[in-house]
Image (cartoon, rainbow, N blue to C red; front, top):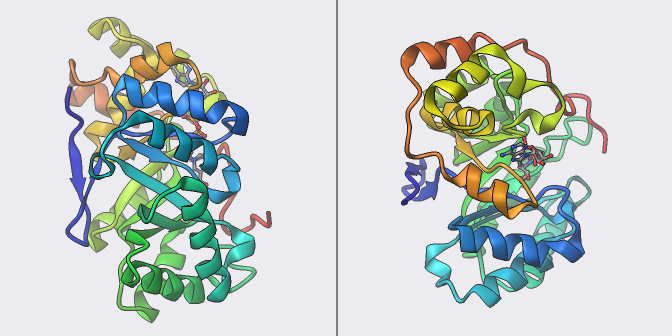
Length: 276
Ligand code: NAD
C-alpha cells in the first residue's frame, strides 16, 4: 500500500503518514523503528530532545532501505536556539542519526520568552543552504510566531508541527496555514491517550460502520483533512493497525460529526507559556 504524499512549499514532498518516536526509550528505539520500517513506514519523526536519534539511526542503517526512500525529521531543542548553537545542534543530530542530511529540520518550540526564534530561523535557512536539511519548518508556532518569521525572513516554513486531534482541532491555525502554503503536521494525533477519544460516539460509530478500529478512524480523519500524521506505538501490532488506513474512507457526514468533537482543549503545553 503506497502512502500518499503532500507537496511542500519548497517543491519537495513528504509522506502523509509516518511514525513518531516521542517517549520511545533509547534502548528500545532501534527495535521499535526497525519494526516500523518492516511494517512499511518510510517517514520517521524524532527530535534531539527525545534522546533516541541514535536508535533511529541504527534502525535505518540496519534496514538497508535506500536513503532516498526515507523521510527523516528531527528538531532543534529550545536550549540550542541561536545561531552557532543551532549549527552545532544539527551537526550533533546528524552524527547521532548517522546521516548526511535530514529531510526536515524543525524549531521544536517558539519559546517566545527567549526571543530567539527569528535568529534560529535564519540559522535554519543557512542549515538548509548548507545541504544539511532538505526542508525546514517549525513546531508549536501559533499564527503570531509564524507571522513574525514570515515578515522577518525570506522563507515561509514548509511545515508547522502542532498539537492536533479531534478534541483540539486548531481550525484557525489550519486556515492561516492554508492561506500561507504551510503544511500542518498533527502531533498527539490520537490525543496521546489523555482523554477518551476512542469512546466518543462519532468515532465509535464510524469504526463500527467501516469495521475498523477507533484509532484507524482518527488517523483517517487527519488524512482526509490533508494533515500529515505520525502516530506512535511501541507495539508492532498497533503500528500495523495505524498503517492500515487506506482501505476505507470516512463520509462527509462522518468527518463533520468528528469535527464537532472540537472542544478547544490542549492535552500538551501552551506554546506561549511553555518554559521547558
Ligand atoms: P499519539 O497521539 O500518537 O498517542 C500515542 C499513544 O496512543 C500511545 O500511548 C499509544 O500506546 C497509543 N496508541 C497508538 N496507536 C494506538 C492504537 N492503534 N490503538 C490504541 N492506542 C494506540 O501521541 P504522540 O506520540 O505524542 O504523538 C505522535 C508523534 O508526534 C510523537 O511520537 C512525536 O514524533 C510527535 N510529537 C511532537 C511534539 C512536538 O512538540 N513537536 C510533541 C508530542 C509529539
